[in-house]
Image (tube, rainbow, N blue to C red):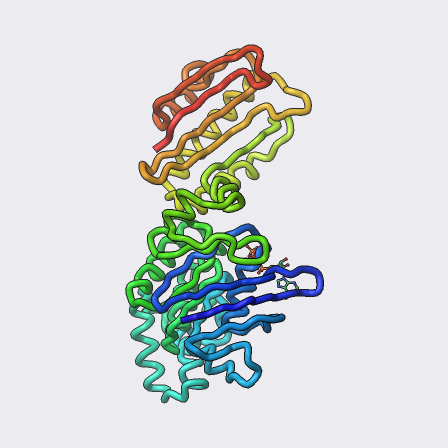
Length: 365
Ligand SMILES: Nc1ncnc2c1ncn2[C@@H]1O[C@H](COP(=O)(O)OP(=O)(O)OP(=O)(O)O)[C@@H](O)[C@H]1O
Ligand SMILES: [Mg+2]
């Protein structure tokens, strides 16, 4: 059990944690979400004492880790941490990375550490990489090794700080499935992630962090579907809905597509749906541009993308300038063909008095 009372962490210029209070029970799997800079990483780093709290107390299984007399090495052996950036030792092979802590800190024999290390490599599906060096591995593989290394000291608690956010989208799944398997072992876990479907699949509790503390604490159903407090609501809506206001006479196509990819990452939308969304957005932009009437001082195209998890479908709605132009039926033949192959339930209307008179909505599956 982890108990936190009046935890405060102040840096010279900012105080991310003002007053954190909570009890984390054995076997809890907690997703931590919240805007950048709200102290999610700081909270984890205080719990495993990579940071020294300014004030307040934290007990881990009854041991006060804020007490200067506490042996922090012992505490950290009970608590593994997995970082966004893997933190593997580049000059050591994979198996040596995993054997290091058990041999140096737990005083295991090299043989014991090796045997256990090979077992762990099997569980993360990488036994064949034991003798490779980290730079010979993909990002997803490195992160699976980092997880195996964390497990090598047999911790009761594992802290993950955005374990998949530095990965190429194609590798997110393999790391998530290793974490999912870990949940079955009943360990206590805290994981900072914005991937809602993933969080929902593994966690029993969600902390939304804001205003210097745990602003809302609830089940995934509550926090993701029915948040109780204003700031949580705004944050969750932003995760679920992507709004783009595009000035077509001066915009970056790559930037727009990157935002779409980031949105898909957060919502755990797979690559095949992402490809269809990209095509729908790209063809719509091209068609709108072909008959563009520039609207000074406003966007020429507003896009809203909303994911509906229940049906794994995405609703895209557009408002744009120009004469009446339903891009799903008129205009460039190839674009229309592409769009008709990937979108359905199209609704179009034209309101000649609106700043952006064309309104189009469709679904992509
Ligand atoms: N060692 C440090 N020295 C000074 N300021 C720090 C230090 N570490 C973090 N901060 C500041 O504390 C605040 C909280 O940082 P933290 O990394 O915990 O946020 P976060 O919620 O994890 O954000 P993100 O989602 O971007 O990872 C930020 O304003 C950050 O700049
Ligand atoms: Mg962080």
